Image (cartoon, rainbow, N blue to C red; front, side, top):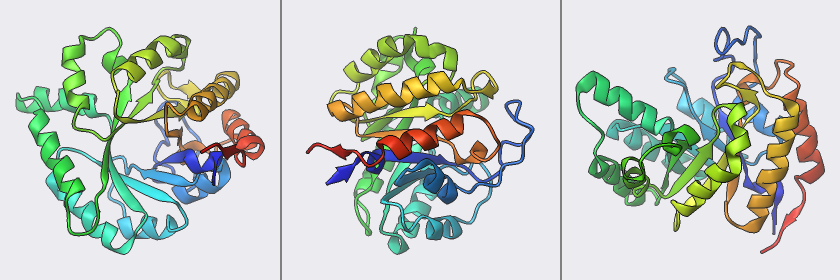
Amino acid sequence: MAHLRDKYWIWGHPENCFLGQYNNDRVCRMTPAEGALYLGARNMYMVPMDLQVNWRQYDLSFTTMDKVGWMMDINPEKVEKLIEEAKEFPNIDRAVFDDFFTKKLILKKNEGRDVRVDEVEVLRDRLHNNEVRPMEMWMVLYTQDFAGKKDEDVVPYLEPFDGIIMWTWNESDLKNFEENYKWFRDHTVGKKRMLGLYIYNFGEKKPSDPEWVRWELDRYREILLSGEIEGIVLHTNALADCGYEAFPVVHEWMKEHGDEIIPD
């Protein structure tokens, strides 16, 4: 028997990593595991933000989480690191590629080449077939990655992934959510899906509007209960204790809805 909170994830970042960024001047000391406790989620995506972190220290703090994934990129060494870590921590079951299309563009600019689909397929096959256990491979997909773009420039890169997470980077773009979600649903048939929910408006570098956050919580819950997606990702612990008013909205919403039973 699953409860609603069992389908929620934290997008975990190292504590205080956003000081001086995105117009945030507040110190935040909340760890990813503490963020999961405060916001009521049962699963973790850990994204180190290109910082050097102690994987084992974080994974020890995640032992009460149901499922854990770590950020990857087109780097076989990181995949091997994840597989090695999974030997000790049985709840590690996936990798997630953050900012996939952004990094794809950066690679083309810096090295003059594009990411090839077969490169991604090699990493997926290694995650699926390794000496520890099969693991899933997920992608972050922003609405600006596909809105107004040619399908042929986007869809082939979705194919190697087991699951896709759709994020609306700019809060002002939520007015187009239904249109964007329809594209996402129609172009990810056969894939696992999640929706990402920003509790701080990183795209527009300001605190989120609590009313928009509440709208997302309610709308995404409807979609989750419909069976069209299998999870919702809350972003992030790394500003959750800074006093921004949208975070208590999520905390209180989860207290109200988190123990709802999800029908089989």
